[in-house]
Amino acid sequence: MRSLIFNVFFFLTTALYAIVCVILSLLPGRKMMMASLRRYTRVMVWGMRRIAGIDVRVTGHEHIPADGPVIIAAKHQSYGDGFVVFSQFFDLSFVTGDAITKFLFIGRILTKMNAVVINNCGGEDQRKKMAETSAIVREQGRRLLIYPEGHLSKIGTQHKYRKGVYHLYKDFGCPVVPLASNLGQRWNQNDWVKHPGRADLEFLPPIMPGLGKEEFMARLETDIETRSIALLDLDNLGALNPDDIGKTEENDVARAKREAREAEQERETP
Image (cartoon, rainbow, N blue to C red; front, top):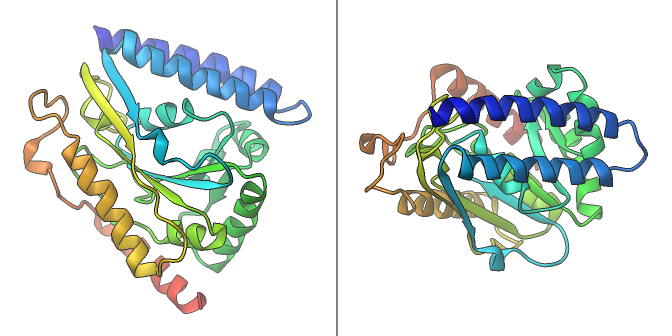
C-alpha cells in the first residue's frame, strides 16, 4: 500500500512541477527554474521518507570543495538517486543521454539548465559537444553530476565504467567526488515496489586533478563500488539478492556499443 501511495504521489508531483518548469524555462535567467527543481527534489525526498518509509541519509559533505567547479561521480541504482543528489545542491548540472530529449519541452529545460546532453553512441563529435557544454558549467563554477556506469545498475551489481567521466575530469581540471550508495535496496532501478528501511548516500574523499586515464578510472571504480557494497544492509535486504553482490552486468548489445565507442575514442583522442 505504501508503494502504491508513493507512486501516485510521484507521478502527480512530477506532472505539477513539469508544468511549472516549462513556464519558468520561458523566463530570462535560470535561477527561478533551478530553485523550483530543487524544491521538487526536496519534496520527492520527503515523500520517499514519509510515504515510502525510506530513511534517506546523506553524509560526507565535508569532502565536497566549497569553491570552484566539482564533478560528482555517483553510483546509479535507482530513479531516486537524482532526487537525493539534486536536493543537496542549489545549481547542479548533470550529464544525460539524448534519449530524454524526445519528451515534449524537456530539451528546452535541459538547455536552460546547461545540462550536458550526449549521444550514447559516443564518437568525436559527441566528445567535442560534451566539452563545449561542460566548459560553460566549469566557467560558472558549478557542480556537475555524472553517472559513470551510464546505466541503472541492479542493487549489488555494477556496469563497466565509461571513460567519458575521465574526459570531463581532464577538461575540468577539478576534483572528482565519488558518491557511494545503497539506495537501490529500497528503490531498485525503476521498480514499482519500494522497500522501507535505511538508505545511505555517502560523498567520498575527492580524486584530485592530475591522474592518468587508467589510474583515475581504476581508483574511481574501486572507491565507489567498494564503499557501495560496504553500505549494503544485510539485516534488511529489501530488493537485494545477496548472490548479486559484486557481479558485473552487461548485455551483448551494450557490450558491442561500448567496445565500438571506446575503440573510436582511442583512435581520436591523443
